[in-house]
Amino acid sequence: RILIQNGHRRIGGIFKYDDMQGIARYKGFIQCMSDYGIKYDDDCIRWYSTREMEDKFSKKGLAHIYRHTRDCTALLIYNDEVAWVYLEFLEERGIHVPEDLSVVSFDDAELQDTTDIKLLSAIHPKNKLGRITGNHLLRMMDDENWQTKNYAYRFPAKLNDGNYNITLKENYKDTGRTLVTIQIKEPTTTGYQVSYQTSHDYDAIQDHGKNLLNSAAYE
Image (cartoon, rainbow, N blue to C red; front, top):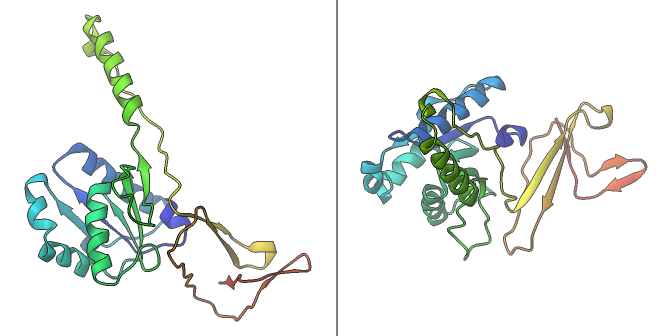
């Protein structure tokens, strides 16, 4: 949803098909695309299994993934480990995140601390998950009728902050146009470039008589 809200329409994905998490994350992806009325290309969805990881994420395998997803403006990736492997491959090809491609992942694993990029990732509630699972197991052991009860627990989805926030205001001040606001959340040496399509040239948006410099209105 966050990718769609930030203007992406051609979104690809890398998912794992031999565990329930991978299938559930894929189903969530296609359901969200359907909810927003956005078509997705099956060819832009790449799959792998545990046994295939060495082959799929070799240089040859990564190049194959890239060939099928290079027209996408954003990717949703199964977890942070796979995301960082693919980001390193893209970096070697001169393709930068987030300037050239937006990436969202899962687990918030913080695998890399030597880069300016903080991967936008769905937070895995590691400690809380362990506590709740342990408590439920103890309760089930003391419950003779545990098979007839539902001990499942659903965690609310949360995202880490990433490097920056982007917000969109549609029909800004009744102009029929969209205001894009980008907030850089932490110091970084990474250069940011904003690309947009417009049918009119604007140097600034007039906001109550004040020029908001370095802004652009687009349709």
